[in-house]
Length: 106
Image 1: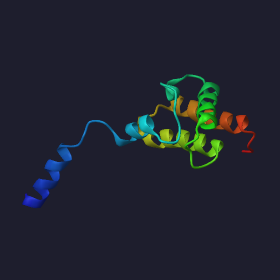
Image 2: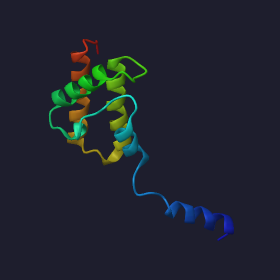
Image 3: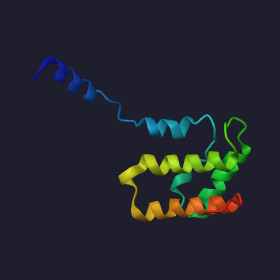
C-alpha cells in the first residue's frame, strides 16, 4: 500500500456520520419545512405541507410550485435505494397531488 492510498483510506474513515443531504433539508434557505413532513403517511398531506411552505416562503428563488416540487424530488433522489417501495409510491403520489394543488398538467 502506497502512502498516497493510505492517506486516502484514512480520510475516508474520518467522514462525518451525518449526511450533507440531511443538513440541506434542515437548513434549506428556501423553505421552512414542517417537522417530519416526509414521514407523513398521506400523499395529500405531504403535498399540502410542501405547498404551504412554498407559498409562505419569501426567500425562494423560483416559483412556489417549482420550489415545492424540487424539495420533494430532492428528498426522493437523496433517499435512493434506502427508500422502501411503499414509501416511494407515497412520495410519487405526493408529486401528482402537488401538481393538482397548483393546477398544473401532468
